[in-house]
Length: 320
Ligand code: SF4
Image 1: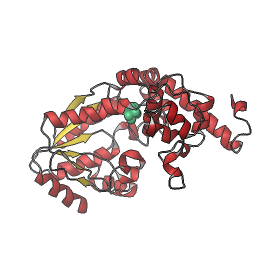
Image 2: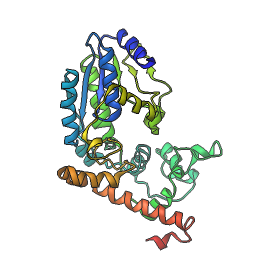
Image 3: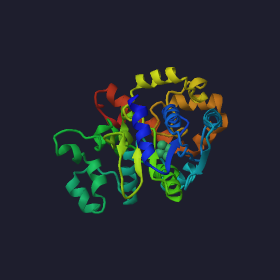
Image 4: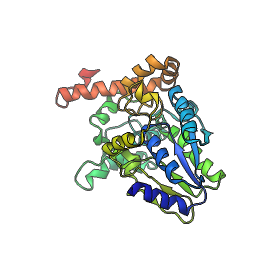
């Protein structure tokens, strides 16, 4: 009830709200809520086509259109994922790590294991990425920050032993998702952006918000109707309102659906197997796009597992 009242209240105050649909579980619940409270039918719905998408998601969008009798506008990526990856580099482990490695590679960093003070002399325009590399963020508070490389166990040791021979970047997030959604809102003079981010999903995206609403009088405001939903709340909502999710969950058995085959995926190996079984062409496409990152990620995971099993590794060289 809180959620319905809040959603109704907020939507009422805006003239041109836009709701970003992904076809995922959270998005399904958000859509159910918004369509129930949007009595004036003023909310526009948009789906971002990143250039590599499950057929099951596309089918689900058709189902949603009919179920709620709504139009869902398909917005093409400013640069589709395959293009953005080719141009800027490939995602590796997480958004933050990819961004830091992108910056270091841009300055021709040689992955030296040296203190910040000497590295900043060699690479003076790379301060924040060098702070990540030398664990300066947490050092200041006497602990490891999630913005330090040490937050990901044995990553630094791995990179030093196996420097990447391909470009790393998170720019596809910017060009395939962020910019496309921003452009759509701008072109349509939208004043409220509605997205399905939940605090409980964790990670940098959810962590960058404190509550469900960001009022912005000069620009577009942002509303996250599911922000306080727990996993249990989602189950209850599904049951109460008979929400049907896409085949990605019901048939393929995936637990999450983000970008198809994104190397950040926690359950990546399983996702690749699922793709091979249900959407084999997509599996091939994902492998073509992310091949180098998949191999490098696998190598890192094996390295970390080896180091953990050997309590830090008596000799890194042994792993080679
Ligand atoms: S989630 Fe992964 S694949 Fe999708 S745009 Fe971001 S980095 Fe690229």
